[in-house]
Image 1 (cartoon, one colour):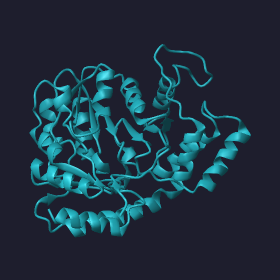
Image 2 (cartoon, one colour):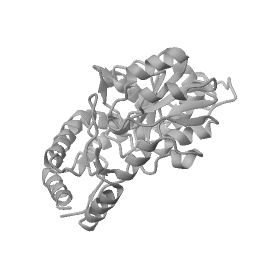
Image 3 (cartoon, helix red, strand yellow):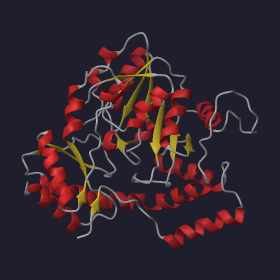
Image 4 (cartoon, one colour):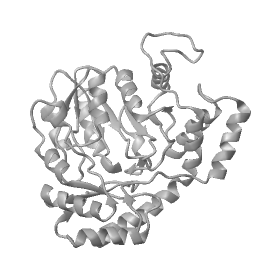
Length: 357
């Protein structure tokens, strides 16, 4: 059997993509909010049911711009169990991450622990829908309103996720999406912000386009270049057509993993509280030693899971460790292979290896 990696980028039919490329050639427009870019924003708005969406060249810049658009300063409460981009963006924008421990079942920020961390310098909450599993957004939003805090949801993993019959992008002051090639929906590289009103959209567009307004007048000092080029927008338009079928395929493999591994007493699985996109298959091993044993044995047999997310970001960005659950989980978690191309045979092979340990 060929090597099996943690993911494999979805590639749409080449002949269909070439048709989009021909359109780009005909217009001669390859950047600067071209027709593909505009079509993608419109199609994403329809797909997600969200009126206010701004596409960008990547999710990390989208986070930076979200922080600027909300004019955040001081302390921002966030999770240590996620990709480094969340905390890195806060540091880059001169905010201080204050780490809140995670729920050991959902693996998301624990809303019951947020209020004790709020002080006079706290301005926002940056929560992450880990592995596309929705946060308890209703509780978080209630806390934010009580203390007059802004809320950014890092939804990098969560395109297509649903909570209480609403798109995951419906929640918070701003919600960020990543369209990186490793995600369930991608534009090769890309991202987006989902906002709540036209005023915020205009502010985001100025920040993403050198501080210029719609007429390309420079009207503010703050601004960067976060433009999504036409080729990436074209990939997104095409991939969007295949997203739902991809979710269905991944769901089959996800449920197969659960079925074959559920009896393994050394493993535990994430508690799901909404509708996920099945782009990740995390398992929690009994101990960090057991995790290392599983990882090494799988690697030796041509299977390459990843330790998402290790280390706990608190060990890098904070002076003290105050989130023992996140630290423990980060040392025991493995994400098993998952992609649109993963086969029933491959999942059976992986599970047999794990159950033999």
